[in-house]
Image 1 (cartoon, one colour):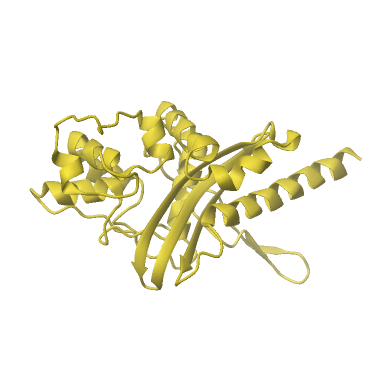
Image 2 (image 1 turned 120 degrees about the horizontal axis):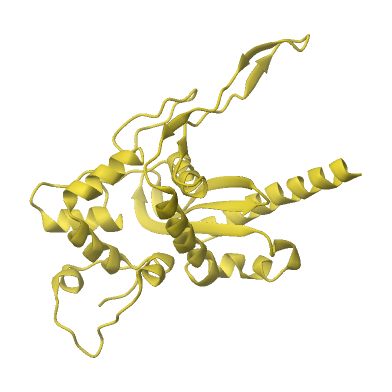
Length: 253
């Protein structure tokens, strides 16, 4: 019960069925960001398992990186069902997430459940071309199995096809060029305090011919909505795809 993007106690805890009660699949709830569904799911899962999977995905700990990355936080008040509901739906002020960590989450799902340690500097060379430093990709964790990551990819693709990002992506999905491209994503919104304003989120991935890219985008709007984070992410996906195709054509010629 309730609207898609709201979260009220009466909708979560009331088990009474009326003519206004809606039944939806997990796929639809994920795609449309229905908070009540995930609040109820959190009650089913329980605080222990929810907190454990948050830890597996990097919350409440620092990543081993070559750049400053703030720690994302997730907490649940002991013996407080509503705190659990809020944490499960992400509809609170206690849970924090940086755009980079959001991109890491999307990359982990696109990478078959394998989380790689993030880094910025690929290599450092001197003027004569000698390599003085070269980053080596390293495994950070494997929070979920291959099967689970594939199921999550399906849910994230549904966000693009029929969910909260469909308007941003529908034109490109009709183009022949994108027939072999897979997009997946998850959106979110909240009233932020630092910086102040309506905050719009998108984390997602693009897969094309074995190549993958993940993006975390966030935009803050004080009064007027100027651009959605889904639209920003799509522009970056398109730029990356354009460069890949250009690279392929140069190689073939």
